[in-house]
Length: 68
Image (cartoon, rainbow, N blue to C red; front, side, top):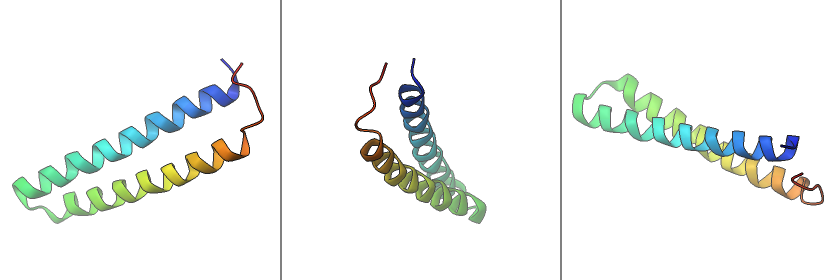
């Protein structure tokens, strides 16, 4: 597996983890009302959005490099 392919897989996993944790924290906030859960949800969702922007930039930059 090339460095490009590994990087893509790793960033996609990070995006899914960030949005998943954000959703989990939001549902905990909705159920329990703890302010920390809301902060975690917002921060994690923001990290997921930043990772999506980063992912698009990486794909644009590495478009001429093969996956092998």
